[in-house]
Amino acid sequence: MRIVEQENKYTVSSEDLLELLQTKREEGTPLQERKRPFLSGFPSATTALGIMIVALGIMVIILKSDIGVLKDDITDLKNLKAQVATLDPTTQVKTLESRLGDMKKEKDVIREEMAQLQADLETIKTEPKKEKNKTPNRVRHRPTSTHTKVRKAMNEEVLLKKASPQGMLFSDFSRATSLDPPPK
Image 1 (cartoon, rainbow, N blue to C red):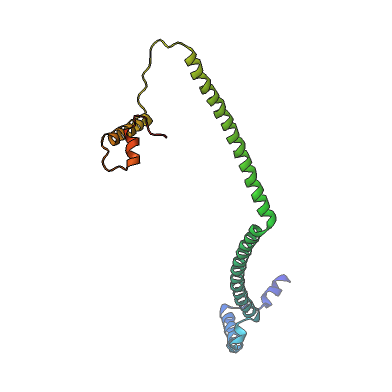
Image 2 (cartoon, rainbow, N blue to C red):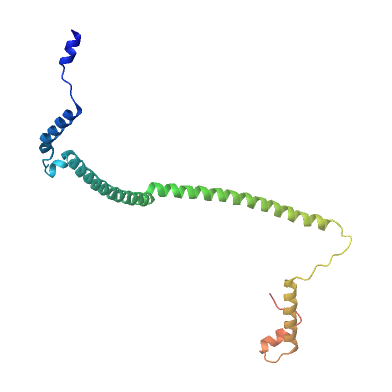
C-alpha cells in the first residue's frame, strides 16, 4: 500500500515554479509602482525636531549676549560698591585710625632714638672733661677752623681800613684809628 500512494503524487518541476513566480510578479508590480506625495517622504517628527533645534540655537545666542551684558553690569556694580565703600565714613575713620596708630609707632621709635642720642651726647660731654682733668703729655695743635679764618680776614679788613682813612666819614675815622677791635 505504501507503494501505491507514492505513485499517485504529482511532481512539481522547476519550470512550473518559475512560471508561477513570474505571474505573481506581474500581478504585484502595479501595487509597488504607485507614487507617494512629497510631504509623506518627510515624517512630521523630523520637521518638528528641526524647528526645535533652530529655536534652541537662537535662544542660546540670545542667552549668551544677555550673559555678557549681565557680566558688564556686575563689574559696574562692583566698581560702584568700591566707590561707596571709600565714601563710607566708618571706613574713612578706620583708615585714619590705622594711620594714627602707625604715626604713634613711628613717634615712639623716634623718641627711643632721641633718648639714645641724648645718652650718647652726655657720654661725649663727660669724656672731654675727663681729658681736661688729665695732664697732657704733649700739646696738640688743632688745624685752623673756618671760623678763625673768617675772623682773621675781618681783622685784616679792619687794619686796612685803619691804614687808609680816605673815603670815610669823620666819626668812622676815629673808630678806624683806635686799636680796639670793633664791637660784635
